[in-house]
Image (cartoon, rainbow over all chains, first blue to last red; front, side, top):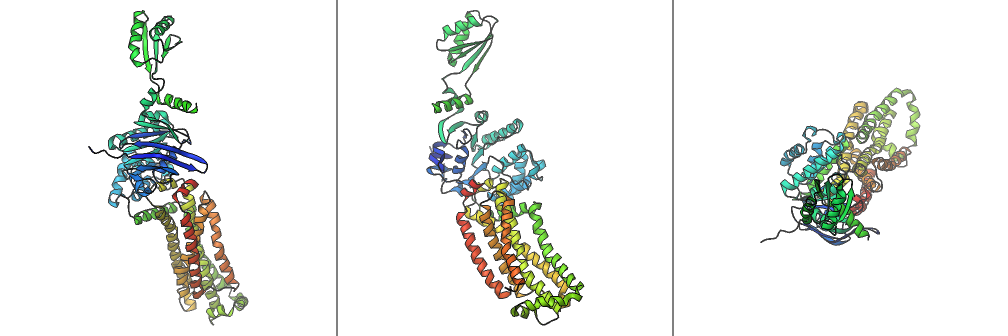
Length: 315
Length: 272
């Protein structure tokens, strides 16, 4: 069986700006078709990583390959096959939406006969066809971001880099952009790299995430894997009958010795309880004649994992 | 597939010039200056010479002050003819150089520093262009525009000057070897020099206005040339235009080469 090469691979990738190390010995592999998130605070090295992978900045040390091409020496060839949505839309506001896409198409080698059709298709898909001949200066931030995303796709790139795709967008515009990214990733089966500090966004869109801190990778995995690393289990909220909460707490403590039990009105919060132990606990409560009105298990989110990993790294 | 180099260059030049056309702050000086210089000024001068016939003799002293070499160029005709030749053919040849310089200064400032200011540079850096292609395209746009405006300005001036004075002079004005050298050799050289200076300036500033204001200084050598010619220190005849053009091409080539050596995607990105 032939194994297809990864879409992206980085090994010991390092980039310094003077005395500041922006990317520090970063290593990761992205298989073709995966949506991967680079998560981190501002200054974690996310944007610099994208720049190095596209051959726009040179690496100080280490190596990176995109689509089998060397990021240091094959920058133009890599950029012909990748699309990048920069943090600011970077559109020519004096030009119309159609002109912005048309010029980008020419720069990415779309043949003259295909440009017009490709541009109209994208404008239609991104809900901008009725504003095609308006200058971008009059567009809302959300419209500009959609147009910038359309521009990044104009040459049908094999790898799409999205640098903070929804930063500074309102929730509606951010949802629109999420839907477009999901559609692209699902329909086209292309590799997508998203940098973000929006953890909800990463959890929604990414198959895997790399958590960066001061240019270093502190964790790699699926959002679920990273969440599960957090104390191995989540928390469950059990709403019981009035004045039964003390009794329920006693039952819970007896049933699950390692669990942390907290009381909050008529609600019992049991932490550190394995998912497999939950049915037995509920059965014990029923047996003890505790009236149960609601059982809500809550898994640790990627956000919980993110902060826990940062705290762990501090320690 | 990565497109051909020519396709990149053409696309960037077209885009840059379209963007320039859409900005009043950039397009207006490019339109107004040639009209003022090539229509307004000769019209004013010719009308003044006609209306001031009675005081014309006072200008004889101006002609007398000129070196012999210049007086020879003015011929032996009536004083008004000598003055028309002096102003319309000789002085305006030096003034003409302001046009390609200003066009280059305005467009290059918009194309380099303006692009940083508008934050459109980063998207351009992520295209499959090489640094060489990007540099050539960024130079070619302002330079071609300077040539086009200069050429158009020359045609406009030739028509104006001849409508105003050809009948009186009994010959065509401005269609001379000197003017052809100025338009086709010296003008493009001066534009290239201005471009080299603007590239250097634009890499050190953040916005269009700053680059344009500093870049305005490139006009100073032309002003010196005009003043030197008026004072009789230097005369821009065909030979001088040819030699000066050669020198300026050399200097421009050197400055553009230095600019090219420093032109790196990475430094552009980090200065944006």
